[in-house]
Length: 159
Image 1 (cartoon, rainbow, N blue to C red):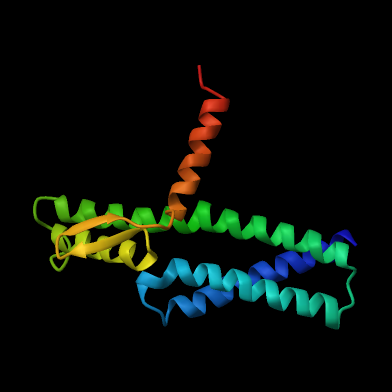
Image 2 (cartoon, rainbow, N blue to C red):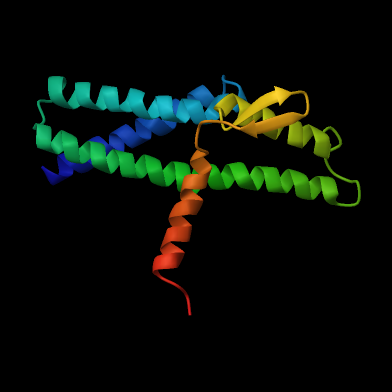
């Protein structure tokens, strides 16, 4: 049963990664986080259908597989995706600031506008008028990782 759980969770995670790679090629970069969540739930649907209906795996094993799959996706989103997303932005800003060399099509204004547009599309910010924004009703999912790290630092201070 242990191998079944690992195989189901690992297979679902590989399916999630493949589905994400395919979809990220055709969607707007402003919608990547939304599609990460959609891919997560699409994969859960197929995992449950495959395991319960076709392979007749016990429900307890499906439950453990779902928990393990969710942990794998969380590690990917918070450990890989958000780090890559931040590093790309930092690399672009670094190239721009190097004595005027580097990427000429990206000005600081362009980067700030694109970032603000992305926050508006995610619901983190609301656009009031052309140059005025306020906090939206949604929580920034990337801030969750920082809150967890802050909590761990509070619980386990480095002396």
